[in-house]
Amino acid sequence: MNRREIMSLASLGTAGALMAPVCAYAATPTAKARTGDPAGRFVAAKDGTSLFLRDWGSGKPLLFLSGWALPSDFWGYQMLALAQKGYRAIAYDRRGHGRSADPGHGFDHDTLADDLAAIIDALKLEDLTIVAHSMGGTEVARYFARHGGRGVSRTILVGSITPFLAKTPDNPAGIDPATLAAGASLLVRDFPAWIAANTVPFFTPETSPAMIAWGQDMMMSTSLLAAATLAQANFLTDFRADVRRIHVPTLLVHGDRDASAPLALTAQATAGLLPNAALNVYEGAPHGLPLTHVERLNADILAFVTKA
Image (cartoon, rainbow, N blue to C red):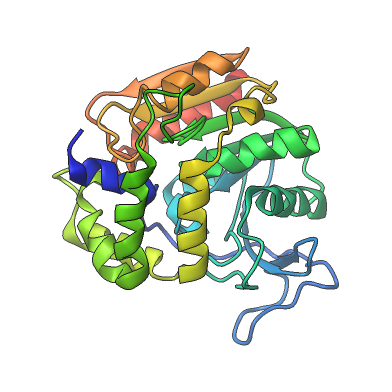
C-alpha cells in the first residue's frame, strides 16, 4: 500500500448524488427548520440538534447512512432506484454534515448512535434495512451495541471501515497511527487541498470529471470540526465488540481496490465477526462504488431485501 492510499484511510468517503423532492414528513416539535428550508424536513436529536431528512417513496423502509464528510445526497442513485421499486428510501445528514445543524459537539460514536435512534424512533421504523457506507458502518455497529438494534431486521455495509483500522499489538495488520497524524495535519490546515489529494482512489478512471467535482463539493459542506474529530475517532476506535452485537442478516459489499478501507482489514475481518454475514467483493471497485457501480449495487441491495 503506497503513501497516497494510506493517507486516504482518513477520508473514508467522497461522492455526490441525485437530488429529488423530499416527501412530506411532520417533524418533531423541537426540530427547527433552517431559513429557506421547508418545514417537515428535520428531526430533532436527543440534544435538540436538527438533523436534515429526506424520505422518498413508500413501502418497506430502507435507511441509508453516508460515509465520513458526506451528506445524504450521496445515496441518491440507490434511493431513487429503490423508491421506484416500491420501497421507502430514507436518508439523513449526520450532525455537522450537509444541511443538518453543526452544534459544535457530539462528534463521537455514542452520540451518533443516539442520533440514528432518534431518526428510527421519530419515523417509527420497523422491519428496517440499514444500508451504510464507510463510516456509516461504525454507526450501525454502535447502534446495535448501544440500542440493541431496535427496529432493524437487516444491514448492508458498503465499503465499511469496521472493525478496527489502527495498528495495535492485537491488531498487527492495522495502520500505524502515525499515518493518521500526517494526514490530519493537512486536513486541518487546508481541507480543500486534502480533499483534492485524496479524491482519485475513490473513483474509477471512467468516472466523469463533473462527478468527481461534485463529490469534492459535497465534502466541503461538512463542518471542519466534525471532519477532523470524526476522522481521528474512526481511525482509533476499536469496533470489534460493537460489530459482534449485530445479530441480523448482513450483506457486506466491498471493492478489492478500495484504498480507503483495504478489504482484508475491513470487510473480511468484519464478516469473520458476524454470525450471519455474506460478503460480495467487486473486482476493481474503489471506495466510492455506490457511484461507480450503481446498477450492480442497486441490484444487490434489491436482491438482499427481497430475499430477506
